[in-house]
Length: 384
Image (cartoon, rainbow, N blue to C red):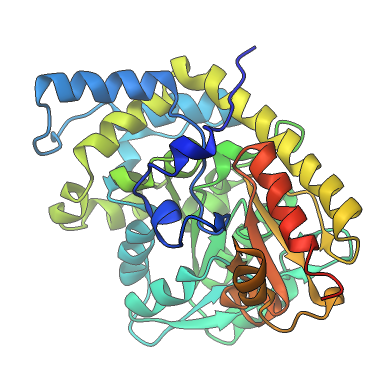
């Protein structure tokens, strides 16, 4: 059983990515969605072979990426997407924009479900559309889609929904019934569903994950998925994602994209993604999921012991914790005080929408030692 451990802080400080360069060295960075683990060995080996060969040119017109993802999806999700209905691009955000540009007209409204990944608001605008907010419903124990609210938005003229599953920042994995209901609604109103599934490989085994395009015929008619290895395998800087359709009609939208959209795919991103999606990387991913499971439970224990006023639910997927800090009375943006006084960088909850006011998002894709120190630093603010 492979154990995946975070690198020591001394090594992490040598990294030059956003997580480790945004703040001074006295700050523990738990904000942006990068992880602190070494690469999966197959990825390192594949990239090293490319470096040894100087294989740094343009991506080829024929690559093994689509077939690698299809095999991965079948092994991990029990879904067999058709490789002939996929196209690559630089990243999930770019894929979302390019699809939205072609399934909406300028000024039309696109539903988003806050609290949600902050760039969603900008991506909709970049595509020339306008945001229609339909917040998630908080049942008291979990978050779920407000299907009545989405119906009302479609009935009022919204023409698409930008769906996030697993959901960022809550870590919610939407179940098959909810996804099927969403697909049926979209089909009823002639709306498109663009499903960001970048966190899908990080769904905990006890929860599982259902791809949107796998739920029913309606989903296949109205849906597009945008997927990547970047979050699970920490490859965001290498630039590679896949836009996936499950119907010839929707694939026509992807087929007709300018070739430059595909050529924005990074050569190293593609090489790394093929390695990540290979069966050889499954043991590493399973080990990562075990580590993240331990960390999400550790975080719960740390908050109970040191910050009992904070409210947190174990996420179904990923390494992002959505923490309600309102009971502590630290204002609308508690992350500002936490950064200034505790020297811990979290993501400001209000950036995810008004529903995030008083919340913060914490990245627990790190070592138990860093996670523990971060919560102890934050807890020291209580009573000040």
